[in-house]
Amino acid sequence: MSDVVELSSELIRRHSVTPDDAGCQQVLAHRLEQAGFRCEHLRFGETDNLWATHGSGTPVLVLLGHTDVVPPGPLDAWTSDPFIPTIRDGVLYGRGTADMKCSVAACTIALERFVDAHPDHPGTVALLVTSDEEGDAHDGVKKVAELFRQRGQAIDWCITGEPSSKEILGDLLRVGRRGTLTGTLSVRGVQGHVAYPHKALNPIHKALPALDELAARQWDEGYETFPPTSLQISNLHSGTGASNVIPGDLQVVFNLRFNPTWTAEKLEQEIEAVFRRYGLDYSVHWHRGGEPFYTPEGHLRATARAVLGEFAGAPPEESTAGGTSDARFIAPLGAECIEVGPVNASIHKVDEHIAVADLDALPGLYLALVERLMLPG
Figure 1: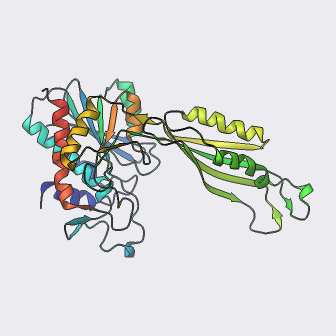
Figure 2: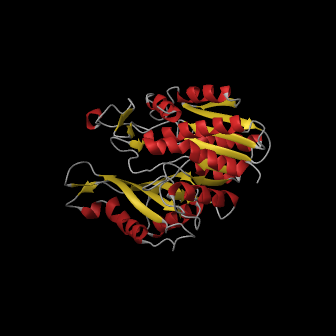
Figure 3: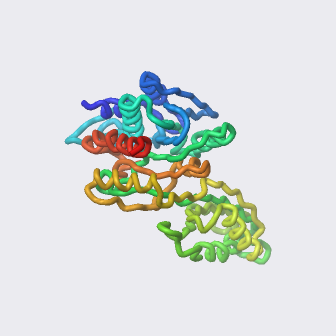
């Protein structure tokens, strides 16, 4: 069994469902300290964060990941226990194999190999991992980034090990992500009997035209490689449970995934203007999950394109699609950010898995990226 399979398996065995790290970061820190890294444990609330660095000065290259996983769901739906790493037919199964304990293990080993081969390397290489990526992400990399701002900690390049590949390792290079904004809308009406609508005010009827306008709106034409901004209504709740009662209030949850055409603040203003125009008696709670980020053509992107092309046998697709990642908190520090990781077909699913051949190749992939970025010539 290879070193990366062993380390991945050790992490998978730990029930690190968000925000519980379950000791994963202690395992990583112990290894990195033996390799000469300085490790700092940053705990905010119930979240553990590990900041491990080697070297000094610039450039600063950060490998970014998370040790937390989503719940496994019904255990009897899995072919084998999700927290017992199991290899079947050349495939490693377990919760977090693809998203993203194997990437974290591979990044750790790549950094170990790099400093062993180049102990006096220029600049700083670092690993940053959190246990709060799959949840609300309040006390994870977001808090660490706030601390970095206070300290004046600069980051030049950030490589996130999120599962980005589509069919084969290295066939996709993620160069940005959309922003995410969630609104929880409350619309007030007047409860009453359905037979006497003139004595009530139905908040559902009142809100529907505004919601229809927002859902049907074409927000933009897209931006660079970003798709158009999208608004989706994810939940509506109202009523007393009786068919003959006009409800007195309505709650609506909606989310926007938006490109750099917009900011969260501008979207909030646009949407609330629609609510006011339709005369809604409303309140809305906004949760800004993160602004969009985009890494234009430059040294990081060109280097990653070359390395992934060698691994995949063809130049990678360069994409900004998908959900969100913790890179959204690092990019505002002025860092160029990309995402490179294993095939994402099984993430968050029953029988999550990674091909052992891909896992064995991951440390070499990350090492090649680190060496070409950090070593002159």
